[in-house]
Length: 472
Image (tube, rainbow, N blue to C red; front, side):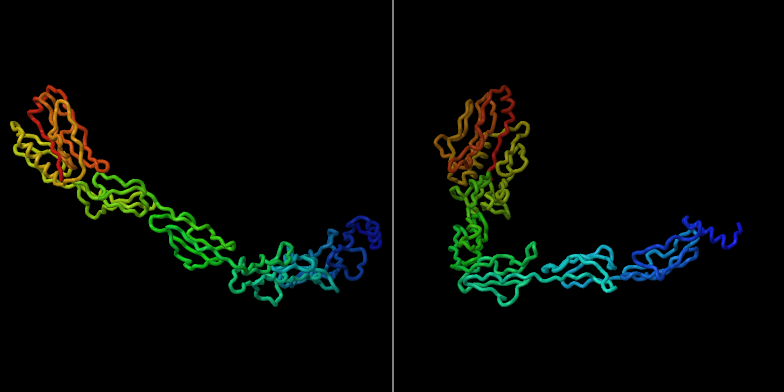
């Protein structure tokens, strides 16, 4: 529609009441950080350009334009946030630090804290504000070191640094006049409580005379602290004599109350049980009970045994109450292999107490005189030992007998032989030997055999095989 120019203006004026009529823009935008320059005139037709200037406390952002433009859709086109707040810069606070969550630009807020040992004077939170059209921080706080009152004096003593101000971290050291002991901490330092008020780390010490009694431990000796007088904080170290164990602390200290702490120990004896018994050895002498640690008992090998090479026959009572001994320090002696004419010898070995079996070749028998001769030979070897231990007369058996003579002394190592009457068979050991028993009394090493009736006797007698107990 073609209208004269005046008519078009009139129509637009009528339509001004509608937003965006004829492509014009509404009122220009308002900003907290900027304001219009000059007084622009309406209407704001498409293409109208308006210039802004940054308000105090703000500055034009780099690469940003302060101009806004009315565009064809009836809106204003502009750079967002073309003015930004000015920076107050990092605040300066000695002996402290600040924290912030955004930036340090106009309007920002920071929080102050002081270093350890200092306390804050002033507001703990300040803001970047505008002053005389320039940004600056509000009145800054400051941090002052925490002071302490002078340390308390002590009687009969003094402390160092007595002519200075006492502030956080400073220490003073107390000393006593000669001959007096300092009880407590010699050094205290200036610190602070929860309200950041100065206080000393502890009470002042005392100066007084302290003596502890001469320490003695029965069955023990001192390793340190050999003086005859013991003052505060003197220490003594103990150890026990051999055969005793320490009950308590080995180190004691003379404390302020004149007592030893911990209390003096005791040295208690270690005890072992009865002297150990060995089948192959016996004590060289009688001993009493109550063996303390370190006691040594000497043993000797019994007849038929000999000392093992490289092993000791000494048994020792240990600190844990047990006996210590070399294993098998006595070993069985070796016998020469026996020979029998017209017969064989059967045995695993020929060590002491080994039993061998004699068997005759078919048609041969063991002459009674030969058996008696062999027995006498070995009995003579056994009797060479001549020990003091005696056995009672060997027990008799029904339907049998032994070759021991009544009234004879049956000494250690004596061997007696049993045999049965005709028609009976020997059941059990044919030979008994006298061995060492409890104390000085001897015992027979085996129970007496029995003679049992047996219709096989004739067959057995025909192939009788004597059993021989070898000595050493």
